[in-house]
Figure (cartoon, rainbow, N blue to C red):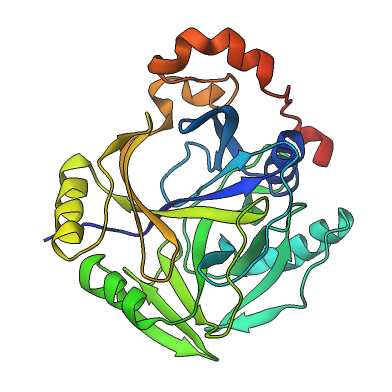
Length: 316
């Protein structure tokens, strides 16, 4: 029997200035803008999706950029660091590239045998680049980053919690994850234990609760094949006492949401139908795409949303 959950689908963060957000993730990190739409729950705010060529599940980092939002504070009950996967020989390239744009980075660290660097975006969003030889995804480039050095997609995510037992039980008993190992107070879980499915738990029993705003993660979404498998997960979670939402249509996937015991918002999102349902694959992310129910308000929304421009070529 195939697992109902196969890894991370996407991770969504809160951001500040929309143009700076677009510039950082497409220009500096070189991710493709695969969709420019609005926050379905707050239509006056953009929702940007960044990923590989087609926005495959496991590659997509998304943002809600709120103009003028104050910076949030990292703490417990939060996904504090989003880790992207790069090739082993790309680490030096990225250290040089980030230095070029005056982005402070950590010295190279080692975790579970892999080298990595850690840094933050302009809003304070925690990012890691983990160099490994276990990822055959090809990544994406606008041309300013050699494809061999490009980001392949997610490696994993770090949850900063006051305790791990209840969250670990959720992952291993109901979400097809398994315990992989621990190192220096970091507890690792995965479906297969490969880039794109890793969840690390770091325990900080006396830590201060996070303050969610720009530079913090709003939620992490896990991937499931389709609506049938999603409904099966929903029933399992409900039966075991988790407060799960109804299925919500996000156009490019269907979603259900619930809080894990440590406070992090979890989503289960379907792999289907993907981002090419309303744009040609060669032109993903070029136009503002709206769901049918809000299309009649397009003129009002376009007049209220900040004007943004995709210009990755300026970050060569």
